[in-house]
Image 1 (tube, protein in one colour):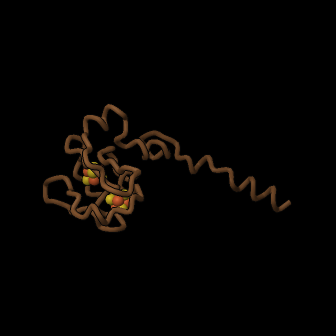
Image 2 (image 1 turned 120 degrees about the vertical axis):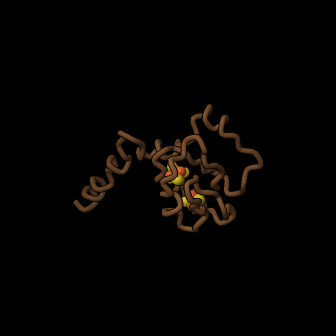
Length: 110
Ligand code: SF4
Ligand code: SF4
């Protein structure tokens, strides 16, 4: 579930507002978005994937956490960690480009 928007990292691009399929965020003029409807979050990670500033934290738990501290997330390297793990971070190679399913399918067709 979406847990945090980092005020210090957010560049106010509102991409997260646009990509969220369940309209969890509200854009705020000249400020960072707010998590307006946390209970509507589907834990899909789309916002974290698209955030260019690694400013979001989506916890894998589907229920809200009682306490989430940005400092602890920073220290644990969790801000933007999902984006980085699938290769969507800056100058990274997407794991999709390493998908070799086509080779398996070709073998099966022989
Ligand atoms: S996508 Fe990231 S940087 Fe852009 S507004 Fe949302 S949290 Fe801020
Ligand atoms: S994890 Fe998915 S549903 Fe939840 S806030 Fe982000 S984009 Fe929206």
